[in-house]
Image (cartoon, rainbow, N blue to C red; front, side, top):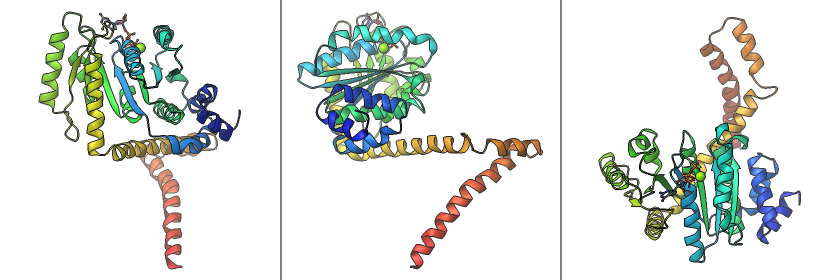
Length: 328
Ligand SMILES: Nc1nc2c(ncn2[C@@H]2O[C@H](COP(=O)(O)OP(=O)(O)OP(=O)(O)O)[C@@H](O)[C@H]2O)c(=O)[nH]1
Ligand SMILES: [Mg+2]
């Protein structure tokens, strides 16, 4: 099972080894991945993709576990992608997630995959979208992606998910911090977890106010604030109701168009990554920069020269080609 076609066929048969392997290829930026994706592309797009992000310790894993349980009870199959924070100090968190999710792993309608962001060559954003595509083609009804909301990660999850849940809890990661961190901007649904703890009501009110005053609506969607207690299994039905509502909203405004926009972002990202490799990898422009700097040119002059070379050359060739084509 080493070539894309076989992997794709196996994947369609429901082979989990094929599923794992293709996700590893995505993670490793293995050249076999794009070919595999092309073979399974026709089946990508049926799953609902739910992103779960928020500050460390907000209860994301507990919530994902409970959501998975509820979805399974409703006879939906669930693929889970857990992405650890890239900080080297967080090595243990992954194991914690695994253990807590353990009770889901005996169920064949559930698949759990952890992905270490620091090991995903060429970017977490790409690898997580790829992993979701594979799980989607495999046939899971629901895909849940957990990532800690620090820095770029919460923006990455927007590309991977149709609906983004931002999970907050009273105490450490309070509302103001979340606003500063830009977490509110990525939320389709705000979840106040640990409703059983003091301060949850206050946080809920603050967030409701924030969503009204900051007007973070998109396409007429008003971001709801839903209180839950994942650990006590309270409020999950209401939360899943909000997810259904958001899905219905997306379908109203055009789910396909929204997804196409996200795919376009993915294309840009892939082009960016490849350009970076081409320009600055072995045999790239590094040497020329060095010698130009040695010769005393400014950074702007060097950059301009290189851009003219790289873009000018290619763009002019393209215009020339299309003109020649038009002439024929
Ligand atoms: N009181 C209370 N505690 C909760 C609730 N949900 C989760 N917790 C606890 O909060 C802690 C963190 O939960 P996790 O689910 O690991 O949180 P996380 O957001 O996944 O954490 P990281 O992945 O490390 O960022 C654990 O000790 C949970 O038991 C809840 O609803 N109420
Ligand atoms: Mg977690």
